Image 1 (cartoon, rainbow, N blue to C red):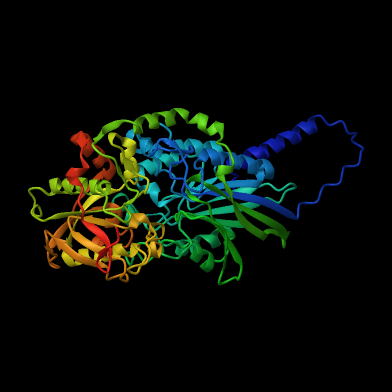
Image 2: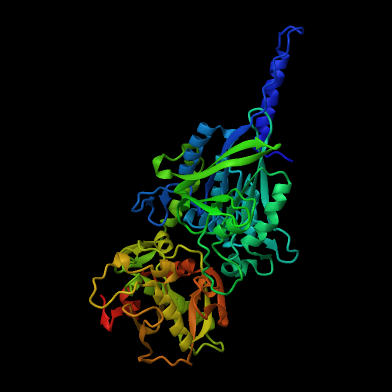
Length: 599
C-alpha cells in the first residue's frame, strides 16, 4: 500500500536516524543485544475536519470590507484554522493526526470569485488559487467535493484540483458516459505506531446529488451524481478488504434526511445520518453542506448495532472538528475501541501569520477590487426589513432582472408577454449607501454566483408558487404581538428560500395556515387570470429546483444567461450612473392578518 507524502517523510527520517546510530555505535560485538520492545497494543490518533470554508482565508468580510463579526462574535478563515491545527498537532504529535475537509471550498467570498473570474486560475500562467495555497501550507490530507465546487465550471475545478497537494474526493461524482469515478473516490493514509503495526485510515469522499440540479448547465452530459448511501455501500466494503483499519466518510451532505428539490431526484440531499445508519463498516462521518454546528452526533447502524460518530463544524472556518480514536490490537488487526468528536472555536486563537503573510498581496488586490466605485445612489437602501417588507433594494434586483429579460426576448415569439421577477433577501445586512456605490455593495446584496433565466408560467402556477413561498412566515393570529425576530424561517425555511415576486400585487395573510395565505392576487389592477401566461425572470438555482418551489423547474425555458446576476446588477448601476430608488421602488406585496396590514 503506498504511503502518503507525509508518512513517507516521517519514515525516511526514522530510517536515517537509525542509520546514524548504527554508524556511530561503539557497543562491543560480544555484548548481549537489548531485548526488543513489544509492539504496541493500543494507539490513539485524531482526525481534524473543516467544511464549507467558502473561500474564507482571512478573518475578513469582503462584503463590508472590515473584520468579520456576527452576533456570536465568531471568527472565520483558514488562517484561524491553521493556528488551531498547529496546536492540535503539537499536542498529539504530527504523525498521529490527519486533516480533512467536507467540501464547498472555492466559492463564497470575493477572494474566491476574483481568482475564478477576474484573474482566473485557468488562464495561461495564471495564479494559484488562494484556497489551494492556504490548504497546502496547512497540510490537508484530503477534501471531499462540495456542490459549490462546480459553480464556476469543470475547468476551474480541475485547475484547482491540479493546484492542491491533496486529493479531492468524490466517490459519487461519476463520468456521465463510463459511470466510473471522475475524481478519486477515496484516499488511504498510513499512520506509524510507536513500535510498528501501522494503522491504515481510509477517507471516503461523497458529494451532493443536487449538483445535477443546481449546476445543471455545467455538468449535464459530463457527470452524474448518484446517492450517497448507494455509493458508500459500494466502497466501504472495498476499503475494508484493502486493509483499512478505520473508515471515515467525508460527506458534503447534511444529517437531517431532508431534501430541497422535491421529487426531482430519487436521492436524499442531507443523507449523512442515513449513510451511517444503513452502511456497515463506517467509524465516523465528517458532515458538511448544512451550515450547522454539530459537535457530536451518534447514529446506530441498523445491521451491526455499532455507533457511528458524526460531527459537523460550523461553516467558513468558524469551528474545527476533532475526531479522537482509541484503537486496540486484537486478533491480528487494529480495531476501533472508542471514538468521539468535539469542536474547537476559531475565535479563541489568533490568525496564523504564516498564512496571512503568504496571501497578503492577494488580499490587498481583492480589497482594492471590491472598493471600486460603480455609481451613486440618491438615497440609502437596506435589507434590514426586507424579510417582512417590500423594500426598494430588493426591487432593484427585480427591475434589473426584468429589464434584462425583456431585452433578451425583444423581437421574439414571447416579447409581448408580461415579465415578472423573483428575488430573495440573501443577507439582512446588505445595503447601498446614499452616495458612492461600490462593487462590494453589489456583492453584499447578491453574494451568490447565480445566473438569470426566463421561464414560462401561468397565473395559476404563480399563485401556487407564492403560496409555497409564504410558508416562510410563522402563523400569527390577528391581534397577537408581532416579534420580527420570530416571524420568519417557519418550517426551517431560510431567507434565500423566500421569494418576493414583482409585477404582481398581493397580500400574505399570516393569520391563515400555509397554503391559503395569498389574497388579492392581481395583475394590472385586475384579479389574475389563472390561464394567463407570464414570463418569470428567475435565478438558475430556483429554476433548477433549488428550494423545491412548484412548477418552475418544469416550466419551459425561454432564455438563459451565463453571466452572474451580480455582474448584471453592477453593469446596470454603471450604465445608470446615478440611481434613484423612487424611480423603481414599488409596493407589490405586504403582510396582513385577517386583511389588516401587519406593518
